Length: 341
Image (cartoon, rainbow, N blue to C red; front, side):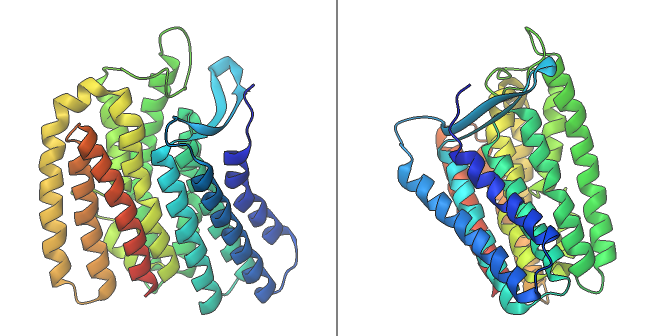
């Protein structure tokens, strides 16, 4: 077993913080201070990983252990350049958003901050996962805090916004689960969900099951129907996390899973997604100009920017992937800051 717990410590620190908030009878102020300190600690840990990261190597800070051996499922987390950028952005945005929530003040404080910390832990797990089941756990786990944060602490129309959010994401994640099981259980040489071992699959329908889930999450035109209501009804800091970080899970999945695992189908279908990228970029940008409120502007401009990122991804070149990753960080920081402002 190759054990280096740096990545795992980063992942489980907010989870432990959430458990402490849920168990201890803390006051509102103490809960807010504790949650903010936890996110600042995670941000400091992420900064330490950035400092220690060796750009000449591949995946680092790995933790690899058997989880469910009969199915070939492992607890395998590691960090490379792409995941490091996503981890650092997640830590920074969550620290800022938690600080904003402390400044604004929220009712049911312990539950609110516990959900924010669980959301951070799920996002960090997703960006560090090297096992497909582990990635799916993070992908699904982040949705639960988001449902509750929007549905309980959102605006007047939070019920409809949450229902639409659930409907869209449920379809995508269910299809992804079916494709994931078919991919891992049908792997040559026996069941495995290791991302390195699954590269080079040529199944078109499994490819589409993953792409649809990631397109809904990104969100990409025309799968963006949940975005305007969710971004308008969520608390500002939750909208900042949703737009700045959670939406990057879809684009990250395209770069990390879809392109290496399905190179053939990605090349065959690239023209469709290039067309959707161009259409979404123009559609989102034009509609952003017509919105009567600032949140609507950020929501539709985010659709345009995420479509632009997908356009870069499906250029299927190193420059396109690098540009897409660069723009993911740009958009994540700017959209989160816009919602907080």
